Length: 282
Image (cartoon, rainbow, N blue to C red):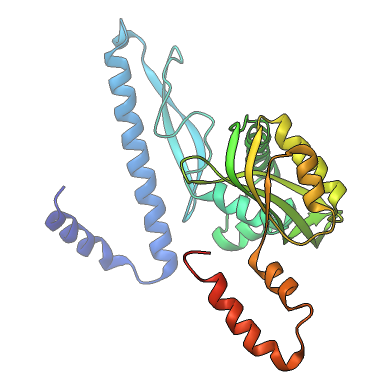
């Protein structure tokens, strides 16, 4: 259907829409008709490729589908021998929304399963089961485990080792926690997150365990490790990667440079250091 026909159809359909509720109801009806028509077309094509298809017959089964505008009751077609596997809406599929990403976003913000259920009820007036939420989050956990166990490249020219503070759910409450990161620059010049770790305290001993893990995952050599000024950090790195050059981040270099500068010279020295650290050639 071309744009002109769509515009004419939209103008005709819009005559009966007065409120948001009208629009949502219409959207659900349109979704129902479109999906059911597409599923029937899929079945027709399927039966056309099956020997003795006219003898198979078919019927319908009811299914509740959750879409962006709420719940839609579908009549999904089926063949007598149960050989039809729809692709548009698969047999066990219960939603056609961005629900997975929304669930994960709410979960990542520290919301409990019960709170997520209540949020979807408020947003869509739809009942989302705790089981569905668990399936979505469990699937992501499996992907995370697979990512954690992947082999790393043998060489990363540059690796940044640092931490960020994020909110995490723990023991039924949301708290701030440090997430320690290893960010690598590979031989193609691309950034790659090598790993993430949660820990209560940062220390050289902790980073030693991180570096040991990285080596066990296949990372055999780091040319430059960019780190902060944590005491014992360089020794921890060189105990696992003896040939690695340690590069302190600029802010720590500036702090070290200003440690013995008198207050009256502070501004001038700071300005001079800025020129040095922003220079293209050092």
